[in-house]
Image 1: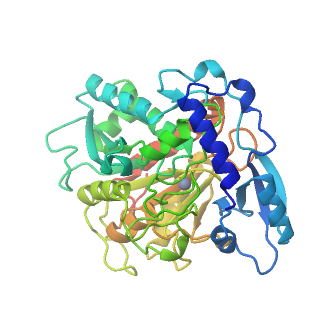
Image 2: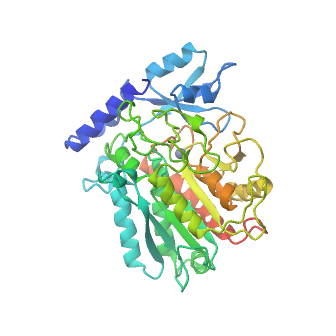
Image 3: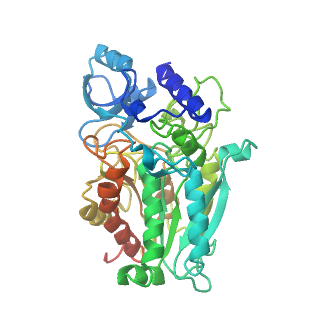
Length: 442
Ligand SMILES: [Zn+2]
């Protein structure tokens, strides 16, 4: 119910874009019905989990105050429940029209579409066969249904030697894996992957640190884990659609635009059916690993990482290698396992220690569990990889709650000037740390 107005507006926008009537720059001025960001202060007896179950789009729950994306009507209903609501910003920033291309490879001032990423992946693989191996690791939901869709693509970047970039765990080089845009509307995350790929392939042979990294690590990147969702987001280039989930609408009964499975609640570790109904933003699917995108990502990670961990309560083996980052937006946080519970992970101290090293470089604090705000994420990719394989795994929440570069849709100029430069040193550090993540940190 509560998303009907948003969904109809989004649908209209998609229809206009498809029909060739993409809104001009003036359309980027938020209308009165557009959702905005608000910080929340909850009264006694109301929890974030309650609001999520009631269909509110709590975009992140970490930090001192949760943030919601809400329409004016939703804000009125929250205030009726005693919630103190303060607007922190608009969802849409004005877009430089000339930077949104008609060929369909970029949108919203310069962000790359799924097609733009696919062209890029093919181009860097062709230009640098000594450094890049490109894999198709599975299909998106639409592709499995014969409705178009995409392959999920993964790149392995290293100075390739025999045995490198194999789809098994025999490789000698420790692995760093970067996963992006599993939540489609978190558009800065896919763009960080794009820039990261370019940084690695163009710096090899000139930058000593990156040359050394490619000689001693496998750097894996899944730039777009939810390509069908990104297609929905980018269908309206000046005001991207707030699509978070994949586009699986087989459960039925949801208003247009509200269907889909939250791929970051669908993994096969501590999966929790309680995360929301089919129309909610955190719907975990009918069972763990129900979605083809989840199977593709887990399938790759299961192949390339050895299982070095026992039961839930047992730590990872001391010689475990590898680091995994899943990028999300927003909140300027690093989240370390576990995210499904406040019970400390057996390797919590070591996980937090590595998190703080990365946080010293990007300025983000490190949290575990619900960070005191009652917002858990069972079935998340990072919990799954750490919980089943023992690989140190983290969520980076890219971008602030408010101000320039905030939210799901930061202006592209903020991305290039601020968001990407802030992450580059942390990513390079994570790759270095992959050799001894539980040992002596670099
Ligand atoms: Zn996310």
